[in-house]
Length: 273
Image 1 (tube, rainbow, N blue to C red):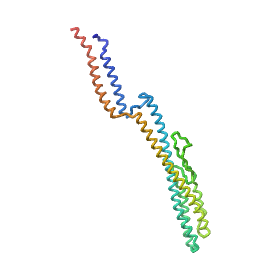
Image 2: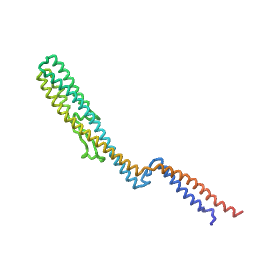
Image 3: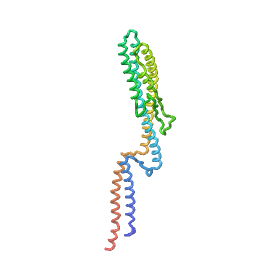
Image 4: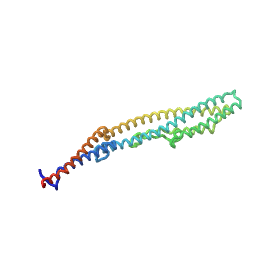
């Protein structure tokens, strides 16, 4: 055994081991603080690169879900408007058929005509108000939703505008049922709009179902990707907590070992007594 006060090999070894323990302790503390075992490229370059790619994919599906939700909102508003107009048209048709009755006098037709006019105005108002996020598919705005995480427009879902606003305005401005002849003309126009609305409601209903199906699929894919990212980078906190306690004990022991090693050169003094 060599005795030297210039070089303390035991202290150097103890310091190396203590530094190694401190590095491991810092890693464990970082994992517990962040909840991640791979929080950057330095931790594991390959895993971090894969996780970042999956995060980019997840961001694309987040945008898809936002687009689908906006489209569903616009479709729901359009359906509500079309259903309300349909209910009004049914009442207008009933009034018009009553007005055609040759047994009605002018006073009765005048009352019926007033109600018809009010309902026609309400029909036009509903169509104008059926707007969501600045879009009104009962007038001239198509509903478009992206379904691809890379924004590919070829796979987008499109619900074309129905343009029933022109028919609503036509009913509002041009028709009255104050005579039997006018009632006949109004009835033909109401029947025409009812037929149009049947197609509109069918289109909107089918479109809404397709949007909801696409949203459900996007949510499932998004959840799967998020779970996959977690499997790659999330830390096992129970394991890390146990590891942290073990490393804290090793740190204390390392400090004691370094202290003992630092005291070793003092034994040389006994040689000079």
